[in-house]
Length: 284
Ligand code: SAM
Image (cartoon, rainbow, N blue to C red):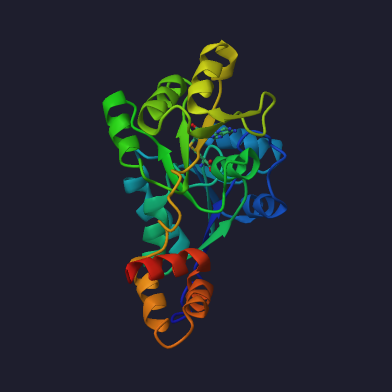
């Protein structure tokens, strides 16, 4: 029968455990079972997970070296009606993992791309280390070479948000040493190691003491790391944009200045006291 358009499949982006195999959602299991194909960063790795879950879905590899060639064929299958699940070796695909090209190609072709959220080393670390998760910048992996790494860290010297990095055991000592060099040994950070695994540890201290802590025991350098670094302390009012201060000043010409500051603070989320002081001082 001609004329009926094929129903498109959905591309599901499925988060998988970062260590503890029980950290997989019921919906992730159901999705991996029901799709026609699982596109996996490393099929051998994913087959272990699928076997553990007693799932027989066919797998195909999709990693950084073949994504450009393979993504169009996967989009063709989606357009033909097959649903596909994208997984990476651990955690959430596209977070320092392949899949960016496939997601964009699928979206451009009008395919629905739907997340099945779950584990992610970044959010696991932030949620448990206590360094501050309200505002953060995820930086992924730093450059491997020290000069390039210092330059990358240098560009973050004034970053006030918490910063999150992924790091390998081979570079964790030099990474923390370079951070101490750039941000100062007193800056607070957390080394979140082997999260959800048997030897999980979360150690929070100054960068200088974290360096000593790492160097004093080989075991402390083993495994996978998330480094969570406190942001730069800001002078009070540094996060108040000049146009907000100007708005307080102008509004203060027709309203009592403190009331003007309270109104602008409500709209912007900035401190009304700081806005008031900055507006008052800008008139002098
Ligand atoms: N997509 C993954 C996610 O959602 O977190 C990250 C993949 S990235 C290639 C791998 C890096 O994530 C590791 O080198 C490490 O920095 C971090 N990582 C992954 N699992 C971890 C764990 N269980 N504990 C600490 N860090 C982990």
